[in-house]
Amino acid sequence: MSMAGRDLVPVDPKRYARDKARVEQGFWDKVRRTLGRVPFVEEAVAAYYCALDPKTPLQVKAILLGALAYFVMPADMIPDFIAWFGFTDDAVVLAAAIRSVAPAITERHRDKARAALRPDGPDREAA
Image (cartoon, rainbow, N blue to C red; front, top):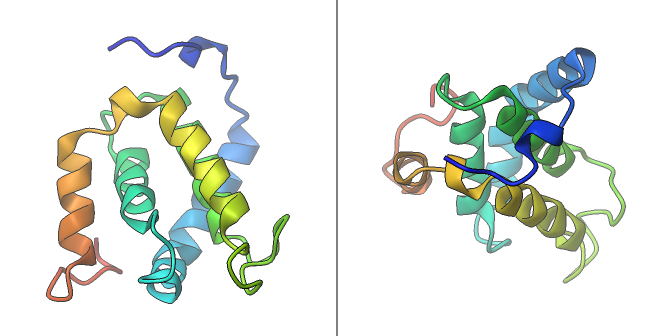
């Protein structure tokens, strides 16, 4: 799998741990709050599953966890409560991260995302 620039991403262990903790703590709550309001939730969930996959390279995990941590943060560049624009910055950050590591997000990650987002999907806290 060839990913342009993947070896150029230094992984800061403290930042990685902080981003991972932030995502693990707030991701599913944020997904539940934004479901049906933002068009990129399925992509975010696929990125989440990719970031937690033991087979995913560390640099890819770091990129995705950084973007997902930004998505989870309650205060960012454009507050989420601002109509029409609140999730624009989240979408841009996630899109850039996903585009930079696109080959790492597999169909299996996307299938898990679709299954988790179905109304009859598995318990998201255990996902």
